[in-house]
Image 1 (cartoon, rainbow, N blue to C red):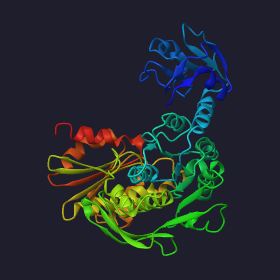
Image 2 (image 1 turned 60 degrees about the vertical axis):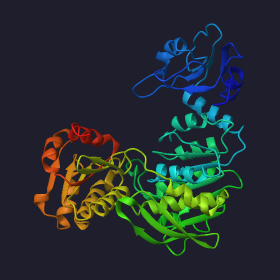
Image 3 (image 1 turned 180 degrees about the vertical axis):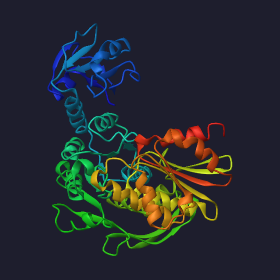
Length: 459
């Protein structure tokens, strides 16, 4: 973060300033546990906490400026800025801050694949730019502004991920960052419990347009039937990517190399270019194509597109392959949606080969009335891929079992547990040397803890 004076911050957030108006900050924090001296502390009220209770601690740790909804005395050389809503103030601060940077801004949204796409784009752009990107999955109304405020003068391009749970949220985030390039990875059924239909999810994702600059460009997944149906209907240039023939940017000759990765070819600037992704799973080709399309918009050479993608590596808990002794574990416990679960099961089959395979699947949450059908479809995929064992964990996971049995899987190779804790001991007995085991479920199922408990004694 570049240095900002208290009076500038106060003007940007429409606040009332008391204390030292000339004091400066070069960092921002909403958590006193990680706050360092010289920071701006924004007191956020959450469902389970209230940052206003930690203002004293923030000042003791060296906060120079505090944004608060409550009156608070500014001591010494510090300043306090009082606002009506600290969350909105954080958004206004980020919106005004990013205006000072004349650099390309990329905004990414979609039901699944946002973080992978963000990382691939950042890797491709880093071959010719100094890239700033969303920290982890800081993609909501608090995380995205914090990511924006980490921009500095050394950065020459910014890549931001935008998540949502309801209509209006992408509109809010897009208007903060004002993207030059907008990317929608797909329209799945994540969060359909709150939005009601895929059409409403499409509406929510298309809110990215509302904040885009006048000369903005959209990059859309042409293999998604809802997104491909938008051809000719949007008020800006659109590039469609995918494996379908009608896509502007098409991958062909796709070949899985198991654990080693995926190879495919794409025509870039009228030349066939071979791409190698050093991560397993054919589903990653789609995200890579989004990165290629973004690279083309920003002048990345064909050679650097190849170089950037070959240097990509998975983030922790996103199809992370770990060797525990002689057992291979695919840790994909960060989140789960039907499409990503099916993709992970396919990867399990590709990596296992002739070895014994076990799919440990936890509940997929927030699917509403589609939950039963979605879980049954994933269970059916376990059977179709001829996975040796299915271990279903959670109340909703009963439908994995039904789907697998209906698809012909042997009942004796299916086990259901009501919760993660009850599964640990049985999994310890089930897993044998040379097995390949997939752990996949929504973050709230905490399957990462199951992995830790099973393999706690193995280095």
